[in-house]
Length: 425
Image 1 (cartoon, one colour):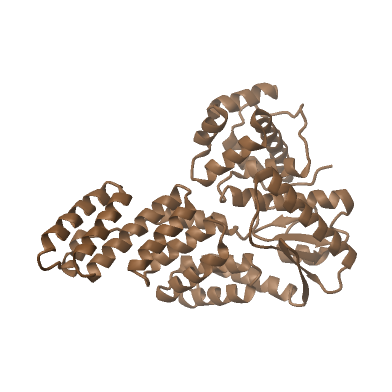
Image 2 (image 1 turned 120 degrees about the horizontal axis):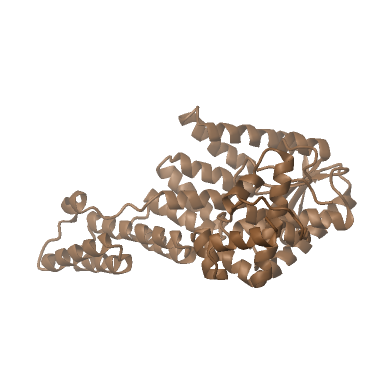
């Protein structure tokens, strides 16, 4: 019997937050009016430099960042490195880096932000961009110094929240709390920060005396009195899940993932989930050790399901719809859909997304079953290679309807109509 649906986590995993942060902020480009006085080219090279800068501004305005940044750099080489020239170059690379990041080219974006920082080493926007690009590129350890420097230069609440989530995902609650308290000192009524503070303090109290076991791919923490054999079984299941996701989705993270094992009652107290929930992924994998967690093959499936959520989330950079996350996680754990599943005649993927997140357990269960069926159908059309391609397109910022056409050659409306027909809607 399949498990009932899991609750939505309180803490949004880091990749999802970074997606919104990156897309929600544009670069601060060169400003002809504000920089004119600071530029002041002089001497015989002045006309050449001024002409290059004007050409660069026009290219920048049309979104041709590569050519614009080259012209800004060339203009600066014609004159002494004035503050205005450094601003031009830094702002151009900032905008180019953010464009690359929005297009899903995180490695390229990191290089571009570093180019901008060569001209403006203490610019908070460039440092934040570098941190965001590093997160998207799976290099969270490299993101931390850039974001810490950015927030030291400009106390941005969004950057502090991002640092909170990064440190929490790396199981460094003390550092996360430092940033939360600094944010609340400036904005005492910040609702998100207050909720996170309560959550992290509750977890820290519950996990204060936990033992720690590190493996090649995970950091597992558990109560010192926990059954060592049971902990060992979880560790084996985690390492097996790592290999399965590497093969299925090509997901091979370079950083260890935090896994917290609680006594059953404490798991409910810390996470606030219902009695039927057997695991949770919220940037960390959280499992109830003891009577709340099965053993043997059933344990392997629970662990695989939660680790699949981590893999799907990271591979899609937090952009996969929840129905696809839940359907694919169920499939990868070994669940298979009922071919005679009844489907509401008017159901769309938008409706399915709402159904999966419904607070009514029966409706949510139906949403999970339909999500698994729909995911299986996609896999039947192209297997895991096509599914990886779909997740990759979502990660790059492509909308689901466009990604479905590119990968499966079907419009969303055509796919929904086929599904209603196949399920006898």
